[in-house]
Amino acid sequence: MPTVIAQDGTRIAYQREGAGPPLILIDAAGHFRANSPLGELADLLTTDFTVYRYDRRGRGGSDDTPPYAPEREVEDLAALIAEAGAPTALYGYSSGCLLALHAAAAGLDVRRLVLLEPPLNVDGDEADQRAFTAELRRLTGTEAVTFFLTSIGVPEQLLAGMRDTPHWNAMVSVAHTLAYDSLLSEATGPTVLARVSTPTLVLHSAGSTDDLTEMAAATAGLLPAAEQRSLPGEWHGVPATTLAPVLTDFLRRDAARQ
Image (cartoon, rainbow, N blue to C red; front, side):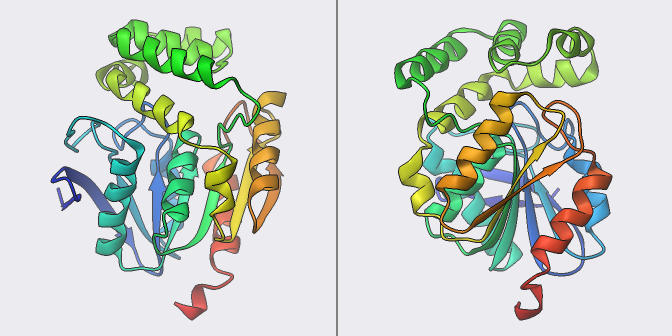
């Protein structure tokens, strides 16, 4: 399994497939390569792009070096972008969008961004978010996963179907990293987005609840160079077969220059 070494010495595991301009896919909270909806999407994109998937720190085949800070995850991406060869496109899903935004805001060589339903609550109470992080740090295992998924609004019917499945057990195995994503949320706001000049496509599912679609709209409104689209899908998700051609069209607009 290939790895890159981040600035703080953390080993980050990744895989590379396909041919064309580089594209890095960034997973959501609790997800990693062995437990992710991004595998099917990656397969569909490899005809047009060299697709990189990786395990965010503390998950799957990647190491973890405390203490956590969003800046460390940006450094992880910097190491992967250096391996891929800049400039690189990024696709983020859910909280993976926030990491992609921080990477672009930090000045990494990112040529385009695609974000599916970034969980950016610009009107949220900062004290509530800090309390949420503190509770995630206190809880472990199944309790942490249940608290996280319930708090972010996963419909009860979906939640009931997830329990005791391989997907659920995989999330439990990296439950300590859920607090990392909450810290990432704490660190993401209008001042970060104002520094992102990268052309960005913000997507949301027509099957999502209003809170998710409103956050996508708010993100697009705060970014200097963004456009927004609604795609057919379910709650907080769009089928890979629907996503792939949309990503390809947006990312290939300037690929000929690379």
